[in-house]
Amino acid sequence: MNLRFAAAGLLICLPVFAAPPLQTVELRTTDRMDLAPGGALRLANSSGEVAIEAWDQPAVEISLTRTTFRHNNPKEQELAKQSLGRIHLTLKKNDGGELEALTTIPSRQRLFGLLPGFHDFHLYYRIRAPRDAKLIVDHNIGTVTVSGIGGDIEARVRAGDIVAQLPGAEHYSFDTKVRVGDVYSDFEGKNGSSYVIGQRFVAAPQPPSHRIVLRVGVGGISIQRL
Image (tube, rainbow, N blue to C red; front, side, top):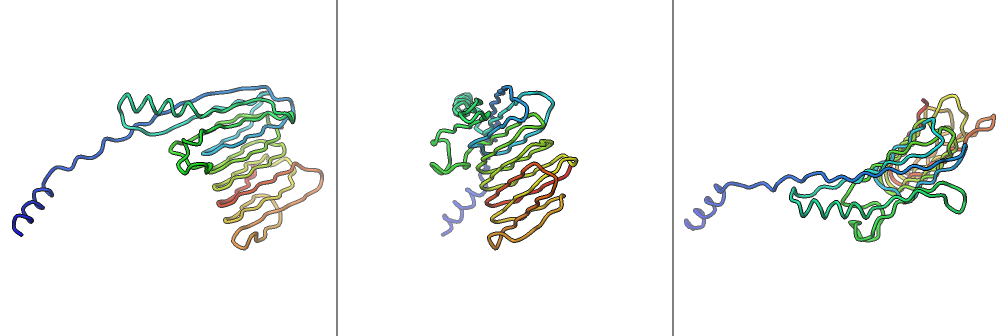
């Protein structure tokens, strides 16, 4: 017994060596394409954080930053950069005439096989689009923020949040739902329950208005007047 206690005491007294800290590995690309007045931008298969802001250029610019963490040795850093490089964003006109930004992620880079949105890396999209652009967003997991866009907006987030910061001088019709979570709005409209544990906000003002259709599975929606 004494030998066991002595061995245990020796182990306790041994210095504890912490694992070396992980280092950030980052890869950023920027794509740009012209968009006609009132044209539509479709963002498909995105995950992470999306920030869409209005600007006065007749084009869409998308900067995608891919970030992960690895041990600080040349081999792991290089392998991480190669892995991030397999995440592609393609910006092109689709058959419907929309400007489509499609994110392609190899299935082996997902933490749970084929489930979208679960990754060992983070994606951040900074998107600048014309103020009168129409937006269609299909987002997996994370936050989508839209600021200053005055056109129609259709956005869906499976898990996360949508923040819509809308020009206050425009008129909007709202059709928004959260399955599990809450909806907040600076605009007048009708709140109600949705799916028992969710919430809905709708409004259909006159004169004719821009359509705002928002859907969140688990999370929240915040509609703010700029």
